[in-house]
Image (tube, rainbow, N blue to C red):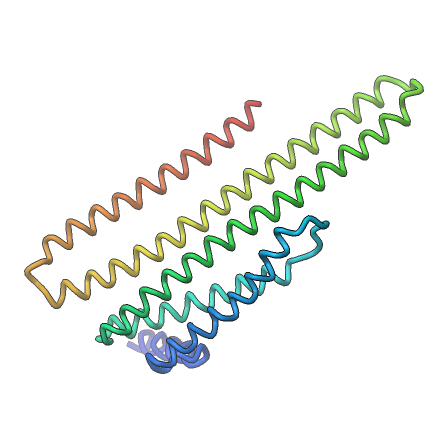
Length: 237
């Protein structure tokens, strides 16, 4: 009992810190975070689309990631309000905020992967330029061993860049799966709430839940197999 009380106290404290001491406060906090995310994402889109050299953007990515986590926490608190008997209006509002969070998260993962690929491409080009300069210096015949080492260095650089790209794609896939899992969790909570109000449809809802769980498992397996095949393909090249 003491452990449960501590958890409730911690949850209430977190809600107050996020401005979620009431349903209206949660909605207001969610809109504020979404406005901040729109502004940060606008800057991030410009950074990704620019043709100039990409500089350091760790602070911007960290800020966006932090805002996404805060919005996710606010949505979780709103879900708690709805599950405890909130109005249908709040339930519809929560659904809309979940959709906004999902769209922003997916776009952030996509832009981040694109930006990392751009950096890796620039790094590979610089490596090739350095290799060409070294090759020109050795054209006078300083020895085949040195040329072989340079070729091996260039090959390792290309392999490292390809592996980084595969890892970035796997991270983006994992992030998308986590987001979909959160979305399915919210849907299951709403279905449970409806089932408690309408006992006659419990059997139908149970069948829907089993199907959604199976779809989630199949989606996870497909993503895992695809990632594994990509790694196998790269390793066998």
